[in-house]
Image 1: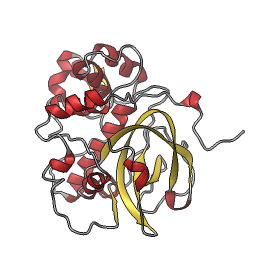
Image 2: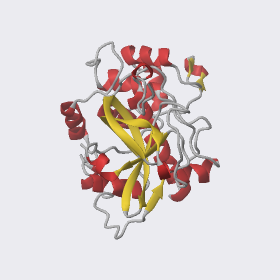
Image 3: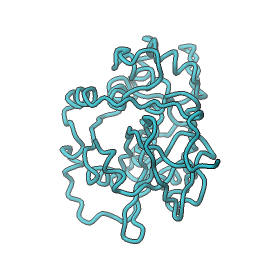
Image 4: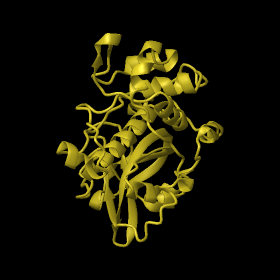
Length: 288
């Protein structure tokens, strides 16, 4: 029997729903919501019909970011957050005049996964996989991020994604001696997006968004790259832009299930096989 859904054997839930923890992290921020931030209050007038953060990757790198694959591990929170940071950073380089360089292999997920669970979450999830988006965002801000590369001075090799290391750090935390290296590159600010309008306004200004929910992407895209969603295990993905098709707005979702996990046509502005376009009303249930 063929279905349009991912085989549950291949998917390990990783997003943990915890409104109270998200609220706690939100309370740590100088500005708790994107809507209350200067960018959220920006009177932008009529928004463009299409904004693709993939344009920034193509301009800086010559191609979209590669499709990531978290494998059979519930590390999606780190993948969603890293993808959002990568796209936002590329937008700043491409269109904001930021004098940064982008790492050849992108950013490492293992520190955010381990740090979210231990340094921020204090092991409250236990031994199982998974984390909370707010914890990962707080770690990226307070501790920082790093390139996917070896760090021989620390005898740490982050050149390729490692499930065993993710799980090791997910219990023991990021090594203390490595934390100063991460703190060289902190994320400057994080904020919770609470409305679809804020979501769209953030994307229009080049801010990608990591979002966690119990809605998964189907395996097959339809015309113009539109993809349906269904209720499943907790998952975190990143939004990378939006487009208006026949008067209706859709949001691009980048997934971390690897190449071949989604098939069918893509939209010309989102030439990325690892995700698809969801209707704006579908996003309304995620902005929480």
